[in-house]
Image 1 (cartoon, one colour):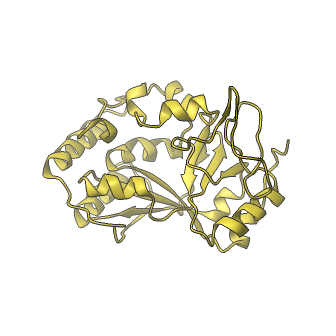
Image 2: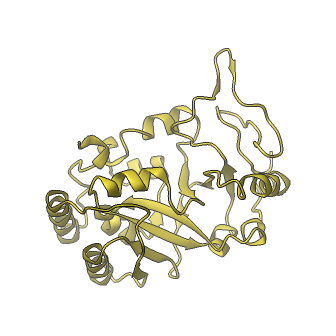
Length: 247
């Protein structure tokens, strides 16, 4: 089992940045911790299960992926399109690939939370291969951990536009040179205000949304109230505002 840091794989494939998508109102938490935390670390920091995505966190843990920080190579993921399309303010944290390649990470070409092809019980799941990845203890989905497997997976699946998850082993401490991508002028103004208030020197800029974004006034008010509380009280851990639970 190769847990060693792999250097240069992403950059060698022309990948300059890796994305993490999050609700806008989580920016004060992420900014203060300066990290994308794995689920055990979130719980240790005092967050409850209502802070996590109700549609995916249970599957992530059950399938062996709870102890990773999850990012993606996809610049237009379906989940982002769906959330923005429903008017829910979200943003992207764009992390330079050089920062990722200094860490231990794995790649997965399957949607960890949604795929139905699992190795569990009497089911064999998808076959292992250099382009699918390998099964590791406790994992129901294959991943690429070695340099050769990562290179093979990217060589085949990047040109196909396959959604590829980037799985940081543990937490991802965020560097100062990340970019916060916002999908409306209003969201950008909020993000810049938050970053200024928590004294985080991240660059925030406007980005074209991947589809329609009819920003909801109602959801926007919920975000404003949430952020105001989070800024005022650094020990506050949220009120369960999580857009998978809204319709």
